Length: 165
Image (tube, rainbow, N blue to C red; front, side, top):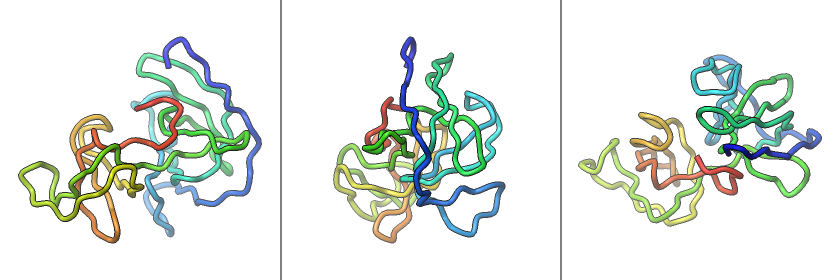
C-alpha cells in the first residue's frame, strides 16, 4: 500500500457481528480482525471484529509496515490492518472472511509432521482462531466443518481484501 491511499469511506449499515472488548466474549467471532489503538502491530488490541461485519472507514494510511485504516464499529474507534478489509458491494467495507488459496491439509498440530484430519478445497471459507509466528509465517488454528486443526498460513488469505497481507 506504499504510496497509495484507500478511499473506502461509507456510512455504517446494520451490524451483523458483535465486537468483543477485553478477554471475555459471549459470542465467538469468525476469523476476527484485531482493532488496535494505533496504526501498527505494536499497538495494543482494544477489540476484535468478526469477518463479515460492516465497518466505517475513517481514513487509511501507508506506513513502515504497510497500510492501516482507522475504523469505527459501534462505539469502537481504532486501527485495522488494511489487508483485512474488503469492499462490501455498497459504499461500506467489511472485515474480509478467510479462505484457502489452494487445497490445504487440516492437520492435528502445527507442522507437516502431524497427521492430516481433512483436505480443505481451494477457496473454502475457514474460521481462524489464531496464527503462530504472524500471519505470513507458521501455522493457523482453524475450524472447518466442525473439526479444529492447523493449516499452513501461506494457504490462507482474506477473500476480496483490497491489499494482500
